Image 1: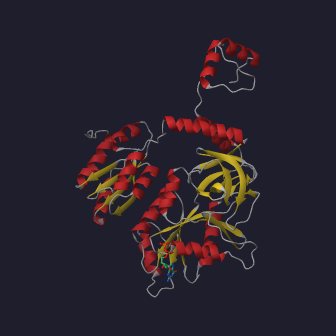
Image 2: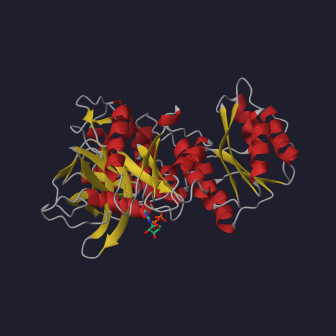
Image 3: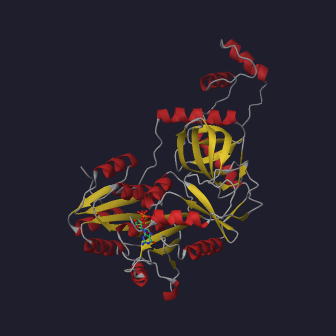
Length: 469
Ligand code: GDP
């Protein structure tokens, strides 16, 4: 509420308290509190995060009246050496129309291609690690995950990781069966293997679209892009370009002569030169803006990746950005955010077995997400089957990922992002995973007997888990 007291009265009170101020001067919180109590009011400190959330909420509440279809944003994932980087290069080239003016490729972290008058935005960093790292900061940017599987190698451990990371994010998967030019290529075998992960291709009665491609020869690339367009039309992706811009940071760095630059993906609205933005504890006024071909832009609409300069500092990839009234407001918000961070690092609390029961009781969770890492595939299956039997009316157990091998950083990242518990069976977390688990407060439980693992989860669900010492 606004105080219904005149400025002169406030100044008078301040002067009586020994503080000389002019009418336009800002006063700190303590001073404001003193004045207010003198005048018979109480003030509350408003948290900066609340201010930012409020701005975001207001943005969300505001109606998008001029929604139009927007280009899909795709990410390429898959096992190492299956051709992710080659495919990204090939897709980019598919777009280079002869004689395109000033078309010198700039690697800004994302690019746009055009296929039969439709644009597709491609995130240039391959792999699910980058995808989940972005997601752990709150960025939901990918509309379609292109899963690359080499036709001569088939489904491999990181293929499975990629599938599970995409599923955990609720992102639809399009399969690119790559390297079909190779003599040993067997696309049918790949399709067969994928059925194990509930990816059943259309020709076999499923809903998964798979396209045979060769990143080497270029075969199938056009159909792949056409399928992306088709899938995006089914998703009915829309945005309103008439609004103020909002989006995510794709990457950021300091460039010589330019200072901090960042690649922003506009997800809603239109970003203009001169807009004041805030992202995390960075702010600034957009000074320059270029696209992935190095072309200078004055504005950028939905799903457009642009590299911008004019920021005070390097923002963090995965953070969102919003446009504010003016630079002064942006700076004030950032200053307060920094102060707050100094005081206390805001933590998201992740689920642990110890508080599972109380969370269930409080109705906070209906789904218990679990990641299983084990020394052999057989154990994963056995644990999975036993755990899924624990499902009851109010709680469902989801095994969001299961794989053979030590618990690694990516597992912990996925757990943090999906609020999951990690179970290790005859395996241990590696050093980096342990460190990350500590900072992200992810619960990792290690077992040698399947019964113990299942029993612990069961007891935790019933609130009978013995405390850990
Ligand atoms: P990434 O690790 O998934 O990014 O895989 P790369 O794109 O680096 O490709 C790994 C290797 O496979 C490289 O030697 C590529 O030249 C090769 N490669 C990628 N795609 C194809 C393809 O379609 N056909 C053939 N024959 N080789 C390919």
